[in-house]
Amino acid sequence: MDVLRIKEKNILNDRIKQLTLFIEHDTKTLDRYKNMDSQDSFCVSQITKLTIKNDERFISIKEAKQLIISIDLGDLDLQLSLRLKNNTLEAKVKNDETIRKKKLKNKPMENLQKHTYQRDYSGKASMKEMEKSYQYYLKLSNGIPDYIIDKLKNMPNNKGYIWNGINCYGYLPRERGVTTTLYEKQRNNSSLLVHEYNSTNYKIFERNPKCKDKCIKNMQRRDLHKYFPSIMDYIKK
Image (cartoon, rainbow, N blue to C red; front, side, top):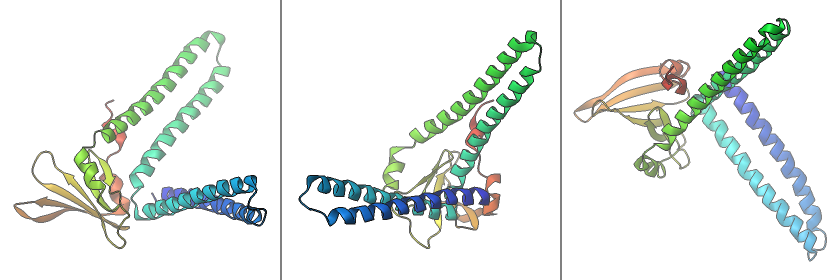
């Protein structure tokens, strides 16, 4: 997971550097236009255009920096793992396609039709499985109850709920120095699971109105994959 985090952070840092260079370039251009005739319609148009572009870039930089903070805290671990699995599956499909093409070149012509059919069937099956997994994820996301979404609008980004295996975080800026807390209601009883985690530890408490909170899980962050399922685990084979 550390490798995934570093790779994603490098991508975001490269994006921030690129946007910063664009801002510096356009800022110099803006200064030149401002020193020209301020009544010239072309100058006014270019100043407005470049100012809007730079404002959008500042927003993108701010969002990228927030994502880096979330990555360091581990809030995006599940999303990064899911993306890696999808990319691995796509790479496997392409690799299998390359291997099949090489084998076909060495096979007699009478076997060409058979191998072509197997290639097409395997490729379609892999793509179908990917699409099926993605659609199931969308179905779960679209089914999040309105009352949860309404509550999230008034919650900070390090508080929220777990619904059907999906982490739902608050819309407001996260509270600094506060442990991330997610609530998960159990269907089979009246208890409530409280997930609390920071950059190193992950704890799960069982909360029951009739008794004191009970810690049922205490894990290091590197062991999370043993507890949390993948979207792929929901797909019926």
